[in-house]
Figure 1 (tube, helix red, strand yellow):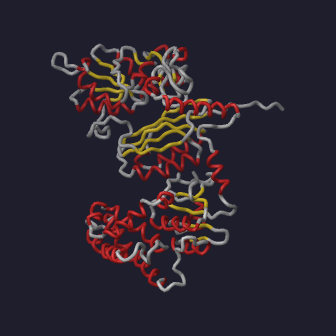
Figure 2 (cartoon, one colour; figure 1 turned 120 degrees about the horizontal axis):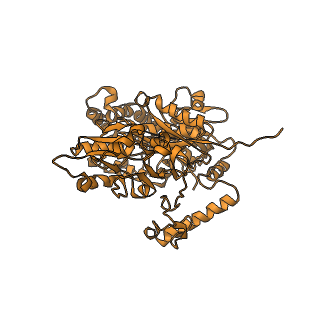
Figure 3 (cartoon, helix red, strand yellow; figure 1 turned 30 degrees about the horizontal axis):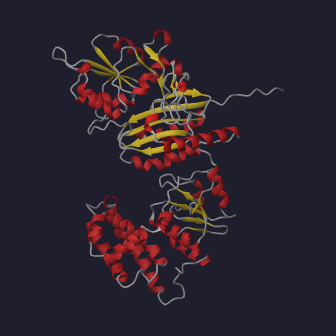
Amino acid sequence: MTTIATETVYLTAAFYKFVDLPDYADRRAPLLAFCEAHNVKGLILLAQEGVNSTIAGMPEDVHAVLAFLRQDPKLADLEHKESWTSKAPFHRMKVRLKKEIVTLGVEGISPVKRVGQYVKPEDWNALISEPDVVVIDTRNDYEVEIGTFKGAVDPQIQSFSQLPKWVQHAKALEEKNGQKPRVAMFCTGGIRCEKSTALMLEHGFEDVYHLQGGILKYLELVPPEKSLWEGECFVFDERVSVGHGLKQGSHELCRACREPLPPSAKESPLFELGVSCPRCHAHTSEVQKDSARERQKQWEIAKARQINHIGAPQRQERVAALLPIDAPILYSFRRCPYAMRARLALLSSGIRCEIREIALSQKPESMLAVSPKGTVPVLVLKDQVLEESLDILNWALQQNDPESWSTADTEVHHEALALVQQCDNEFKRHLDRYKYPNRYDLPDGLEHRRQGSLFLSQLNARLSLSAGLMGPAWCWVDAAIAPFVRQFARTDREWFDAQAWKPLQNWLDFFENSNTFTVMMHKYKVWHQGAKPVSYPATP
């Protein structure tokens, strides 16, 4: 039987939606984890005003990500555009938090409130052919350079944030016979036009239109023989450009400036593969060019060896190799003070473990299977599971205590236990209500700040006598309490710094500026099932 090789086909999905997402920062970690679990790559931007993205992968995986997003009622009607390619359009997955999902830089402009009139692709030709309509291309100059609609005005901007200034001075938009002209705007996928038409309405233009679905939807639906589009459309992925039917275009990308190569660029003496092109040559230093040459060299070596250079897993594999056999597994959340306490103890004890950073809104099944209560930290050992931070701390110090953190078998041990118990019970209760008064139906947290301050005054008195809470050196008590004091201080740092607690403030500054703190607070990607092991502490 003859086996017929089939070419891998990647689905690219582009989508955006303007919608109020006050919790957008909390959405990042679970969304990134879900995309990575499905091997979907690309870029998703999250902001309070909505979401904007282009992602790619196997069709079933991309559709899984879209379904994950649409589970949220606010995104249930999220629309997307599809295109296909035989080459992976992206090498990495990124989810970024932004002030705006497309940066205009003008306060108060919100497509959620009002936008121009949508025009379907099949009706666009008739509109822009009318003599009293000013057609404006809202994209950057290098995008317009490779294709635009016939007769469209090019604002010649280098970024979208320059458009408002152009609008204020554009002669094409001046009033005639006491009336502002009708305006039709377009962009790649429609997102810029949502904001630009809102801007025009704010400037007093009444008849404002934009191409629904953008150029990509027009090229998808309008056949070439009926098209008023000239050239190709630039896209922000490895395809570089597309034409009618969204077929991959003929343009190539400068790997230095990530913009399409100008005509005859490769014949220019300013062109160097992976280093510069005529457009960007003058904007980079020789140091930057040397760095780009080294990157290009490594890419060529990787290609010759048929290994993946961009987004390669080699570092993760090296980290995994450094983990001992049967290394403990630590489920952690970077900002949780209990998890910080556990990481400090493991670091002090020199115990290397596999760390699995979790998203609180999407706790992994493997963690819940060993610890149904679903709180961090959780340390999974060969023969037991430790679900409390103090249990992890005690276990770590029993294995190894090179810094003499333990107070066991000392006369201050009972006093140490009582101090930490006071922190975890009384002080933690006031801390939660001071930091999150809305959770407890409180008008503010000031009374609980006052109550919590009594414990801090007690700590300050201790620290006025010695460098540590239990003596001249830091011990497990300092490590157990410091993360909670830090959280209290960060709620209103200006107020905290204004208090007469100089010894306590110096103690906290010492902690936050230490190398131990830096290592302990290293940022890890959210873990997902199937991810390669990641070492704690992190390796360089």
